[in-house]
Length: 186
Image (cartoon, rainbow, N blue to C red; front, top):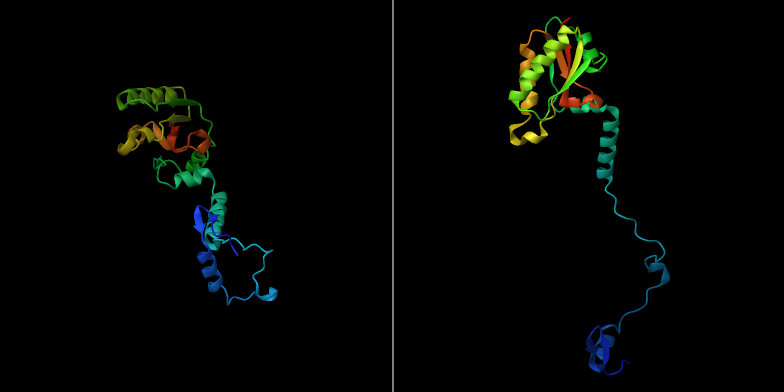
């Protein structure tokens, strides 16, 4: 059968090993062709039906809402209006339908730097009869555990100034929750 010392992956196969193997398989019979597993058809890959359905549902849901709606839904959006400002005006402001007549970028500044610059910008814009301005404050991603420090301060300051009628976080293309449209009194 086997030669006395064939090497099988570094192990020596002896005549005794060969005889023992043949005794172990002596009662085995070949399977008939009909009872064998088909060799030409590979097994189908396992599919996670629920995972695919969940992914499909998330994709459909994400396509239904625009990015502004999604981002505003996370609670990071700012929104304020005086009683004299109607819902229609607020919808128009939130959609970015008012022409932004001036802009100031404050993100990265300290509170001590930002407050006087914002106050001067708002006062000057009102004196120039500007109706809508944009204030970029950033999202506060660099503030760590403190959260958005400048954004929260601007939310507080703008509410106190009588000249500010309303403000709302901008559309994604204008900065999303990192900026606000501010409606000023004429």
